[in-house]
Image (cartoon, rainbow over all chains, first blue to last red):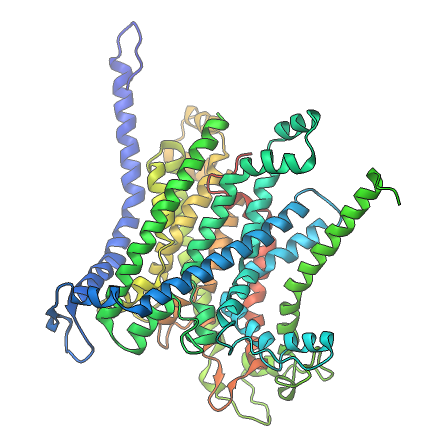
Length: 317
Length: 293
């Protein structure tokens, strides 16, 4: 509002009003093209998806409008489908595993590298390359490496003296874990970069004060550095987890959900339902269920990150 | 040996270098392997014991993939159906245009958020999280919708989708760079008579230029490597490089490792070069409000 001064406030509040209007105009000019594109491109797709969930439709019907209303039948079918439950569990396993793996390795590397040392730049450059590698290339490289006659088995054989031919990609017990490891390889640099930035930006004063007061290195780490790093850690974990839930290229191009269905994560299941089995309506309902699940997770993530940001804002005021 | 300060330092240094080198090997070996495979003649692709570096390196894979030359080999491949150069063109066009749109609108919006909070913090986080919903949930109806609009298998179609999905990153990253520019500079420009738009164009954005370039290149990497949307929203016309790679199988042979490796190397090298180029800015752009300097 206009500032209060003794000589009257009319001039100031008019200026404030004009300014507020100008800001509003700016806001609408910048946001509207984006909103328009969203409404034209994505909104209809969302509505169509909803329509398919409530109106059973198969490819045998002619136009979209021929489908009949089935109420919540499809949702019921989807929610009681064991396969969807398994897909969720697999996705969670894959995402948790790869996120924790990425974080531990990335954090470890960051701890070793955030202070300058000889050869720093070389290691840094090499370590960010995996993130720059197109995921589908990672997938095929992984396949070439883990192929039965491939180098990984070759190296293991040389080390252990006899032929090792682990079937990394075709063994139902380890297939999902194998992809998880590929995912860790691919995305560790993400956590690595974030954690180095975080470590480098830590204020020195609390650490120095603690050391003067006699705290050992471990204590300084656990009781001072880690708590200050919490927002960054949460950021690295949350972002990576959410992206891992949506991972598709590696799992599909290497396994197509197999062997059997051990690598059938959520994206793979939805893809199969919609494009292989042509159960469009079922796929639509599954998509909505997954969307709701993800939105809940995301809301939780937003809550956590916002709380951290508020803490940081207060600390650095 | 005494455990004095100097020895402790040596032990730590030794530990550091050995750990880092271990990871270096883990990072480097797959890269080494794919480059090596791209130079291998056919017989060595599946050999056991594996051929770590070919005794008879050949350029035939590259010639075959990128130049379209058929080589007389033991086995035949259906690569006449593949068109890497067209895919390269598609990838480049779609990536460049969608990234430009994304960064342009993102930066302007970020300016508004940074200076005038046109979007609340809640909205900013919601925007970021919007990207986190798996695209698979929307692709099916989207492809139907696109086919109605005539956007299926078109460049414009992919560009629009990529624009929407990368916009959150564009806004967040450019905002962190714009935040670092002090308001005093803008006030000085205003006093000197510049209008708001002019201030943005000629003062603020040039100062944030290195950050904007970094954001641009990072989003370029994202759009270039995107697979799912490109796969399902294209048929024959707008096939991008990642999709091209996945289609690169021989009709009778299944995997053709050498050829795929040659294509993969071609796809990846530009991105690696770009990434190395912008590495200093990646850290700043990735902070999302959680890192204070």
